[in-house]
Structures are given as C-alpha cells and as structure tokens.
Length: 213
Image (cartoon, rainbow, N blue to C red; front, side, top):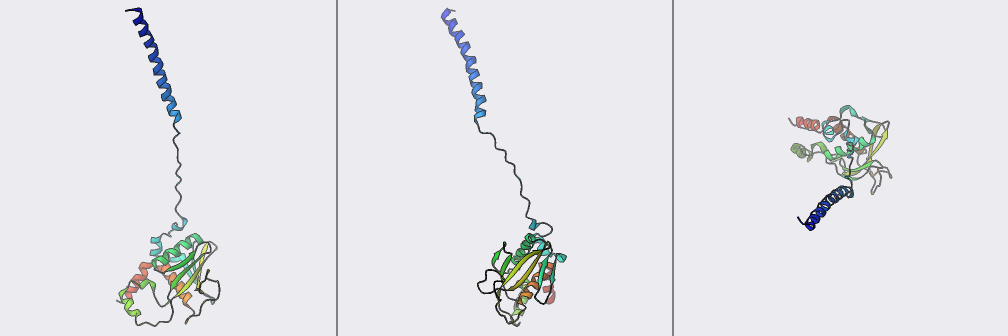
C-alpha cells in the first residue's frame, strides 16, 4: 500500500466518526427544537344542578309529588317548588314545553316567563280526540291571553305567581292587568301547573282516558 493510499484511508477513518457524532448531536437537538407536548387537563364540568336531585325532564314528566305544593290566599295562588331558583327555573321551563304552552318571552335574570294561555283549555288533553269533540260544546268563559309567571326564591324554594300581562309588558307586574270575564285565570294557570307537576303528564293522561271509559 502506498503512503498516499494509507493517508487517505486514515483521513477517512477520522472523518466518519466525526460525521456520526454530528448526526447524533443534530438528532438530540432536533427533539429540543420541537415544541413541548401540550398537556391538557380536561376538567369535566359538572352537570347543571337543575338536572340533579330528581329534576330531570323524565322525572318532571313522571311527577314531582311532594316536591311541589300550591298555597292559596285572597291575593292569589302561589305555586311553590321545593327547589332553589336555578332548579325551579329549569323545572318550570320543562313543564311549559311538555304542556306545549307557548312561551312568548322569558328573562332568567329577572325571573319571569310570559306564556300564551286560555283557561278554557286543558293543555294536558290537547292530543285527546274525545276532548277535542267535547270542547266544541263547552262554554267559552275565558279569552286567550298572555300571562306573566314570576319566579322568586325564598328559603331555598322557588315561588311562582301569575297574572294577566298588560299589553306590551316588559315584566309581569309592570302595570295593572287587563280585565277579563273571570278574574281567576291566573289561579287556574297555577292550578294546572301544580297538578301536572305533582302528578306528572302520564298520570294526567290516564285520568283523562278514565273519564271517557
């Protein structure tokens, strides 16, 4: 082997380890140049308290029994839901939807619903064929009006009052209610809400079927 070839091989042997070290060095720094993996702590938000303690839509449809009661006074009836405001608001909203009562306006911060209601109609029977026929011959004692439902919390309970809403009212108690042929329309609304909340939609439907058997 010539001296020239020997020097060439020796030089190549020195260069190759250096290249290997360089590759390792770049491989090491490559991981450092990448952004660190983002660790996300997923904190699952708890379900709304409105759906706790037996106040799911299914439980409301089945009936809340002793969790609701109706207080009667000369000044008018008050529906009492034995739940704080947040749950009371949820319960009433679900009930209005189940009864297919049209909600024309609502304001959770101020605690009111406006609903379209006719006291002559039993809203739990609207899908009953025989009730539709019977209603054709019943007296028309009330007009369909907008009623205001006002919710207030008292002692961890939700109190619901009702009255006929004035024209263009922003809140149920803005001004004096409009006159009606009978003055118990608001009480009839609360009575209907109470019975349906207490007994449930299914029980109300069963009672209606029994009336025609």
